Image (tube, rainbow, N blue to C red; front, side):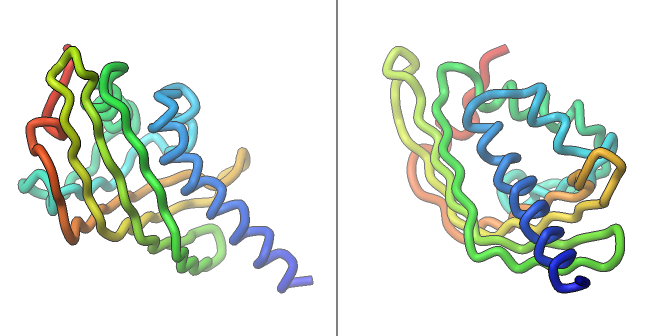
Amino acid sequence: MDQIAALVDRAEIVDVVTAVFDTVDAKNWPVCRELFDDEVDADFTSLNGGEPARISADALVDGWRTGLHARKQSFHTVSNFAVTVDGAEAHVTAKGYAYNVLDEGLGGGLWEVWGVYRLGLVRQAEGWKVTALTFDAWHTRGDEAVRAHTMD
């Protein structure tokens, strides 16, 4: 029975991680927000510099809403999931690829990135929630202005 429970946990965790990226690409911000605990340890320093930070999930999703606006298409894919579960906590490492494309009316352009995502999750009454998200960029290619483009 423990093996079945472990497989169920793994499937649920991978579903949550996949849903983070699917909801971002769909720009479904309310559902995306529900995948996170109220506070998130976020580390995007491999792309943005700075320091890792503990931020509200609302701030994280609002940042994505601004950076991945309606006139910027994004595509994220994750694979090669390594999942460890320790009671009510889980850790996931997955390879990732993403691109951003600006609408032609904004000048077009493409930016791509390859790297590794590391996520922490906790089991809550309503299911697994993401509590930590790190992206370790290995390689980027394309127009950096596309990645940086925002619409206020």
